[in-house]
Image (tube, rainbow, N blue to C red; front, side, top):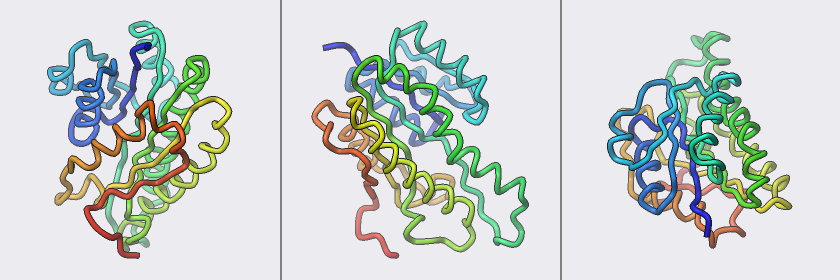
Length: 220
């Protein structure tokens, strides 16, 4: 079987780094993309491709993807993990701040999926995983743009999954219980194991789903 290749965004630290390390541990060749260098992640993964780029910049995405293809020749898995999660009272959110959240949390996954899709289709197999949030259900009142962007990402996940059925490509969302920018957030092992489940060879019938990983029932 061909060795699978994965691209993880927001891979410099935290959950993105854990995702990258876990995928490498399962035998994937891994590239990580972040706004900053990723020496810690690179130090934990053999043959890691470090990409420094802005996930909202289409040109930078294209150049980063060219590096992945030059090194590995193909791509099979995309994990859209990068996000921003500001907190503010709704009336204090400027249009610029609103647009920034939408660009990072919603437009960036669109740009990345659009860029990688030809390679996944050519491979005849693919897994796309979008990191959402159960904040869509709990609705924290000082996170209006964040919740709005994640709700849209869940909708995007569902409809894109339907569109990609003929190509053997699944699209799923994983929803942590706490926004990852929050001080109390921890990277539970459940998130990593859920990622490994949805990208597994045997999970081809799991698509269009949002898997809430909270350790218990989600209020809402």
